[in-house]
Length: 331
Image 1: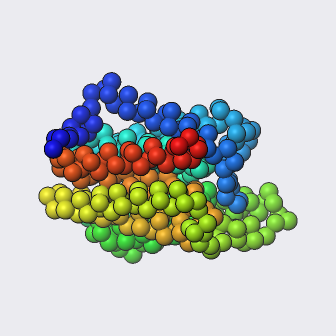
Image 2 (image 1 turned 90 degrees about the vertical axis):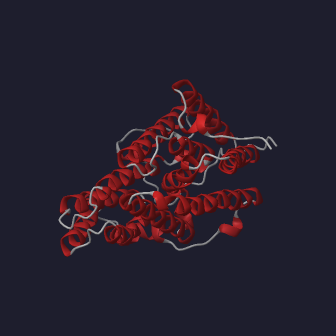
Image 3 (image 1 turned 135 degrees about the vertical axis):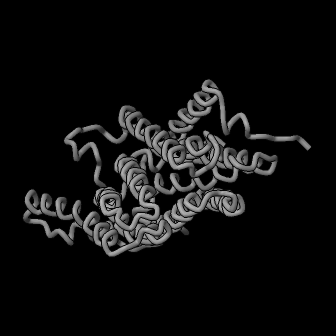
């Protein structure tokens, strides 16, 4: 049997790392070919429009800017993993898995506010991870929730991440009345500022009415094309294998590392549930799902370098490539 290894991908030389990342760029644009009429969620807050910059969604320049957003987020995620030693070895996999996923998910290429929301979410994780065993981490609780609050203004369903933040406080042994109320105030502050601005600029529009489309409950999984359903099931199986491998590998991790991994699993589960419940906003949540997916899958693949994990990684790559081929109708 062939002895497969991920050593050269886990810690690649610079030219190999650039080659791997560069290979995702054609995938990005190839995926766009099969998604010429993307479904844009209702009440979509185009980040460029908020800055009064008029860039057509269908333009190549728009796609390039969103691609840059994705690459920046990928490096921020890699730095998050490195700073807090979530995976206790130097690894390139979280960056590559994240970029490969988002490149394959063409629906997210047109939603720049999703990538901005992801940047805010990762920034919140920096604050929350600094709260380990610190019941007086009021500033971190406020700022982390403040970032989630801004993200929830862009994608309203993210407001339901607040209870997950409190679960994180419990996991990090920093839950206290001070951190709890700081978190609440951090979440509502961006909403107070946003709704005040909205009321001043649109006095004729009911604020609650303007939010209703974003909170519309729906479940449309059965309406997806067959190849998309097969892709979701396949990529979910890979994730489940990664989660099982992560729980098997994390027993050798430090306690603070285990709490961070468990917190990421909570975020993944909650975001997935939100994507199922608010399916009209599901594509807006894809980059955040990719964040947790990339770290969770990379954990066992980076720590146990064997043929089985190499096959899982190869399966992950093949599944995404086949998905793009079907999307572009080239198969």
